[in-house]
Length: 310
Image 1 (spheres, rainbow, N blue to C red):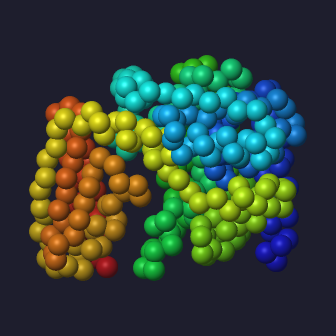
Image 2: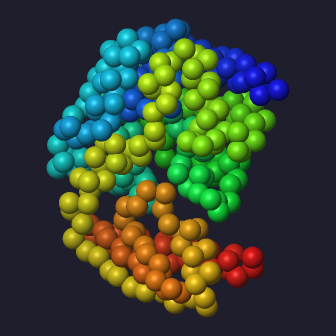
């Protein structure tokens, strides 16, 4: 049954990408599994421009170069200075309503869109949600609901990736988030999709497409880490606030921490001490500091209500 489903998933992803390649495409390329697979399939059907973004000597630029070499594709690298990265982040935030963490991980996409020369910008967005790539899914006590992860992302894409591509006069293509791809992928159980290392089903699919094993087995590296965008932005953090929140007991505090802690630590740093959650919030302006603090406290409030019901 699993092999039959894998074959169906292979056919659907292949067809989805083929249909998206009616024009030349650019790919927001990190050299990881998600973006390399869609680029690798796309080159069968159209001319493909790979765009990798990062500060000098960043993980993503190195990974992108090695991946492009392995699949025999040309690579366009956008090596950006720390100050330029920060300036791009500030500019992006002027136009779009993004959280602080979204600014960090959307920066490489924004810069790729800005430098794309083809009319369609394709990306690997959705693979981590659909196939369980995040480390949180592999925690022993994780409560996994990949369908909700995908639905939440689909709600956010129109206000983020789609608006960014339209801002630069481009069309957006997210093959992993096409309805038929999601429909077939969801026939696999959450556990099958995640596996021991994350995205196990997608890794098997990549090998079926003849993607080199070195890429199919690559571990996830968050965009804000791989590109260096988080490191660049952290250098301009001028304001911070630290506080402790007391809860009824340690179990509730633990549950709330798990529910609110970002997948990749950035603007909010949290720690648990008995039945207290200690938080430090950093921002470049007092306005941003206030917004982040209010967002964090709203998440805490919702998580506390849920924790007390369970």
